[in-house]
Length: 113
Image (cartoon, one colour):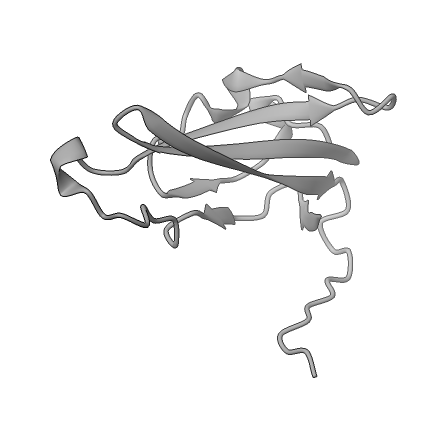
């Protein structure tokens, strides 16, 4: 899970996605991002309007969660990236916690031993 704050510039990067057989005859890789709000009971509520103003078909999803755009602070969202080529596809999901505290501390781990 990643943590961001209302008003932060956020990028989710799926550009390392690839097709192992690199079959260019099937066309380029296609990207599709979706978002759902995670409810208190753990279920998901689709929230496509939150991505309405951004390019959700690019390898990198860039957005700013703000309350005027419908984002809620202190809420977890699930972002899913589906990468496809021809009739084949793969998906990956990540949880992002949006905090209402813009000045919350951030912890970053860059290396493991």
